[in-house]
Image (cartoon, rainbow, N blue to C red; front, side, top):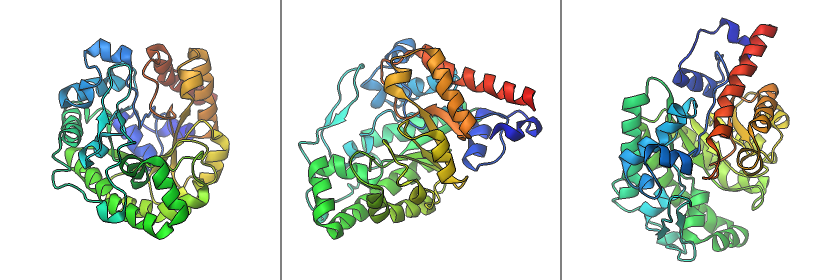
Length: 351
């Protein structure tokens, strides 16, 4: 991606990210996290702790902005959790404290059959979806000319886990594909509504996590259940979408490349070079610095090595593979943009 950077004028972070999402030349590879980079250390630094930073838009925006102001990333992504949408749909939430993620109480499902599925009339005015929309508006006003502001709307497969329970939903997908598809078709309306609302609030791009993860379902499952839905999302949510799926996903990357989404945020269980070869520049890749081993447990030198591995492979945007552990050190996160800039300078000098 940096191969043509000598002829590309200096860019803002926002310009850099939006160009990379279109697979256009950039002045250097963007540092991008379409999922959370919030940490306890950053919460303390700006006095915006969990759970309040998941419930109050001013605190959500303040904590999210540290991705740019403290870490030097080219993106700000204020949706730290995967539960805002599910809370607004009616799920019960365990909010936890600042050193732990809020979670859906999955043993208390709110739906069992397709007929149960209803998008509440106050879905977009509920406290937990409204918080996201207001935080995006705040961030766009304050930082929108400098960096890309990224929103997040959960895909229907993820909503199925939250609203119906992981085991019941997966068993249904095995036993009754027709019923499963009907559930997904009804839940997709929440994905689309929340995505469009974030576009209207000012988001430059949208992360769409849909947790058909490699350790739970196959690539064939992705083709059967999600490819057509993801094509529909790309058509209806009219800004770049960054699809996020955890785990080893090379068996579905060919299908993902066919969706029309702008980018795929991929896990460190996938080799960067192999992933780039499969995608063939049809969709941008974002990732894939390992979280639990490298960012959380190792040091800046190991972080740098993974950054360079992704850059050498031609990954379009470099950042953590997923939402980072809350105890990750700021030092390791800051190393990502430093390593990217150093690599870019070396490439320019070599040319």
